[in-house]
Length: 84
Image (tube, rainbow, N blue to C red; front, top):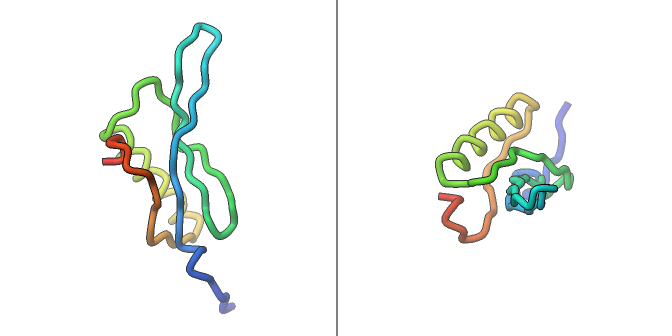
């Protein structure tokens, strides 16, 4: 079956939001948003995000999406140094 995909179906956006725990620790939640479908994927949670952790989370998310048959061509993110 042939499907018609729009350019937005090939884009992901990514960023963090923070959660304060009961013990006043800040946790960073990495999420991805599929632009075309508006699906949100929680990729990981850490107290100390860095470029190495981000790289591994991105790899794992791309592998998961490829296994589901989705083709991603571009990931949008801000200029934070954690995105390496």
